[in-house]
Image 1 (cartoon, rainbow, N blue to C red):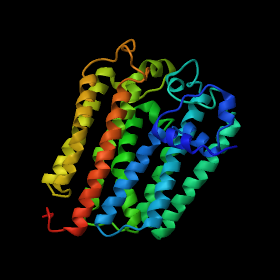
Image 2 (cartoon, rainbow, N blue to C red; image 1 turned 30 degrees about the vertical axis):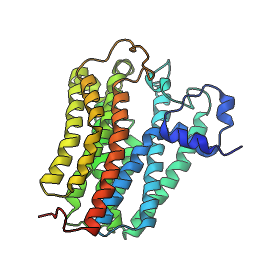
Image 3 (tube, rainbow, N blue to C red; image 1 turned 90 degrees about the vertical axis):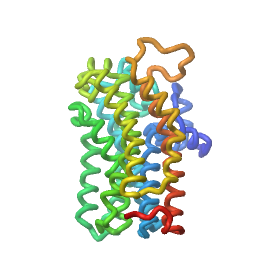
Length: 347
């Protein structure tokens, strides 16, 4: 079995479609894991951890080893959740009959690439590695109550996101909280060794824009597949409140993505004005907002390559640029805070 580094890169950048079991069997272990866990999407976890690392660095708390271990552990945990998500939906009969999930990426169970036993084996190995990283974080912080609580919350979310949270309209809220304030302050607090600093609340708030951006993909996906979800009895937020209301919720989230950053610059002056660089993604945000003002088309527009993805496609397109600019801005912001502390001082 040849290690396919090119496939690693591709799987981290785009969702992979594959129909041949022979092609699947020829892949190396890492390629299979990256594809099966939809790592093009789980990279949002890496973005969130990088941002938290910058926030810890500017406050003098950064350390490479714990950051790397926690970042890898959270990335593995996200992938583990996706493996369990597919296993649960397949076992409940949701992922079948050309259901939405099957149309945009590889689903090893539905396509017969893996058996349920094999899927569980991948889940256990992946989850064990993620828990090992979590155990390290607990040890590193001397089992601080905050870190222990966050670790327990993360484990429960992995186990219960697919069912029942996603079925009672709470999945989208959990996505926002986890990839927003929880990841930001959680990774930050590991690096402070569990000590709640004066800036911790602002660190949590700093995670909110990225949380909204990630949640916009999830809400968009659930609008895209709400008809299928209704038939399957999956009670996502769009199913609970309707397509129009869900579109407006998503629009509000995109607007707040930028509004919170502006507040953090000119309110508590937590960020320096260099963070305005994120507005270079504004054109993509406006495109996503314009699309959200109208119902999902019944048929794919001419030359649209990603159907049945629609709203989530525009949200993902925005998130990629926004996330990259956010990281770039935070790097510049951190350098200014560390080496030119007199520039744009906090009150």
